[in-house]
Image (cartoon, rainbow, N blue to C red):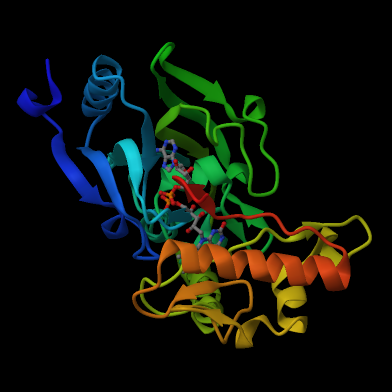
Length: 303
Ligand SMILES: Cc1cc2nc3c(=O)[nH]c(=O)nc-3n(C[C@H](O)[C@H](O)[C@H](O)COP(=O)(O)OP(=O)(O)OC[C@H]3O[C@@H](n4cnc5c(N)ncnc54)[C@H](O)[C@@H]3O)c2cc1C
């Protein structure tokens, strides 16, 4: 099979702009993009990569990614598996399901445990990989196990205890494992109370986050510190102190409501965002002696 002759069940695109797949709205072309709505289509896409010696990278909602202006030499697998099964207080959900939609569904079903995650952009798969969280709750808290696909291992299920979960980290990052679905154990609760809690979380969130698709949320991780209240120093606090909100490179800037959110002010390039992030890091290091680490995944070549 050659790539140009390929007949595939999944939607296959050539020279596809990654900017269309990320909430930053930034990113050059991917040589290939495969849009996969089922586990079978994922297998087919991975097989396509193997046969054509292509590297692959999975994107869910693209809400935690800064893609290089040069794009990606290989295939972007866009994960769009959207199944949802609710069995009493146990939930199995496809990796491509919107995380916010999942929270809404569980709240409506009177199931407690995920409501603090309301409003987080992206998919369940991306959240499982990056251990997304908010308000002291992480997605791994309620996760039981994950169904994965790996080129060499095929399909298998891994319990969360074996996935190295830490603050905004799991061993699934950069692992070539593809999350197909996740299983969560929730608790029965009162739907009206849960909705109230979710609404207040959403109201608070909308004050701290920019409207529309112009960012990838917090750019840097908070700094873990045993002596800090709640065990962390907020990267946003340090960035605010160094005057981040007044800094800009080209069309890349910092959101006025939150100094840890870098934004595309319209037509920003990945290089501009990257350069701004480096400048911010250097300033924090110079003044506080602290090394910030990126929460956002850098995809492609930034050299
Ligand atoms: C406005 C805004 C607010 C945000 N607020 C928060 C917040 O409060 N808390 C928080 O934690 N994050 C937040 N984020 C960041 C982001 O929403 C989360 O990190 C989210 O979980 C990423 O999911 P995604 O599907 O978009 O992943 P993507 O950005 O598509 O991918 C992120 C990583 O996961 C991998 N990946 C994605 N899906 C799969 C899969 N199925 N299999 C294997 N690998 C996969 C990718 O390869 C990549 O390495 C915010 C982002 C925005 C834009």
